[in-house]
Image 1 (tube, rainbow, N blue to C red):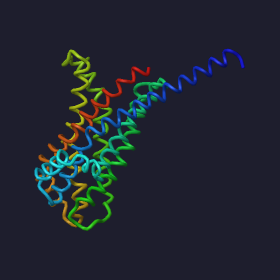
Image 2 (cartoon, helix red, strand yellow):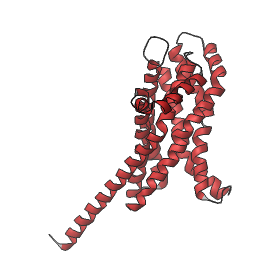
Image 3 (cartoon, rainbow, N blue to C red):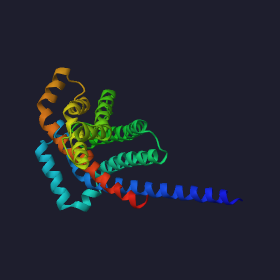
Image 4 (tube, rainbow, N blue to C red):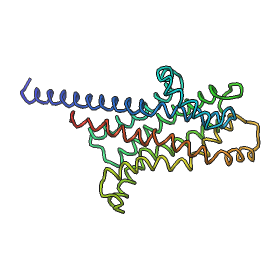
Length: 269
């Protein structure tokens, strides 16, 4: 074997090892970020569902869940609701991270890479989120467990598409707008953090009605459209604010944390 061939093989091995190390950081960042946000999100998700079906007022549900986090943290971490939420966000973050690393590794154009990332994270997040919502509706419902209506699946999918776009696709665009075009911030980092927090929170004012209707179609499949609309109108504001509070940790604080943990990639690169 020639010297040049040996050098090529050595470079390929080093290249592969570096990529695997970067993937390792991606997985660790996803796990750390998910562990930070999963407790609060699981409490809010349960509280919103129980409020929508009339089982428990929103404030009471939040208080009960948060109290359990602080008084019985180990028991709470073993509950199905926590494990489902952790798995959902770990899968979403790690998909986004791996897509970023892979695109960087193969020098994929930024616009194309953004689409790949959006499609991959949407597919993972939407699939798992719908399964989670179905499980939560059954676990915390007041009616006998039954299948989720097709329209509920479609509404949840539309809701999650909006959230994913606002969480992974919109922030870089908004960051450039805030920092470069409008020069609202003198620091790119401050613009990025603001965009990462604001975009997923703002979209909840549009997506929350989809969420409430999807839940109400499961809880009250035999009522009229006017009755569905009446429930959405009554629960819209407090449910939206709860989902803003939920999405802040989920894709805002969690996204910032994920970005921070991924910054350790520089030690590998």
